Length: 243
Image (cartoon, rainbow, N blue to C red):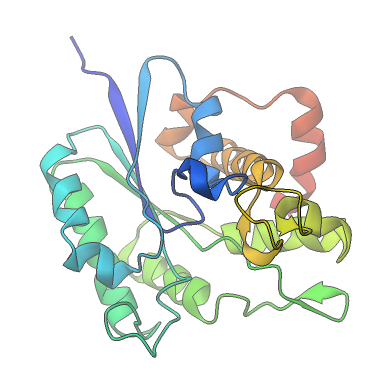
């Protein structure tokens, strides 16, 4: 009998499972669970603060290599912490070691006939005028797309999709999806917080829906492992996949 397929997520804090002390911060990988079919296992290995480099150096990719099997799927999304060039433990250059590191993740999947899938980084809420800057995560999304084309690896441009969704929401409404809290509202953030990188529950849920919609619109085998969005969600999100 065919074993239960597993979807692994290798990524950073934007996807990771959060501890109670961080709530209402929520990773999109947590919300993604709602769309995974019952006979499929989601193994979210994303970790706060990790880059392509530090995830490998600390042994997390090696741990996935020991677990992943033929027919599984490996979702790969990094970039936010690769930007931190001032930190030699994490920083990478987009067209150099970042791409070299991506190859290592892809090879782990391909070595066991699993399916690698690259996702460009979710956008930061970095408005310039009335639009989010296209380089909100530097050149890392472009570098990932270039790498994917050169190496014939599937990629979904989640940076573009999430940026366009938030642009449509507008500068003020888009705050509703991020960790923006006034003083006194949360025990975890008594002095309040303004965080334009990390999602709250609503932002994680919407981002997961955008990712699922992109997968369903693709011709990738991972779409067969997911439950569909309901009709109203499909209508709301479809426009962001075709611009």
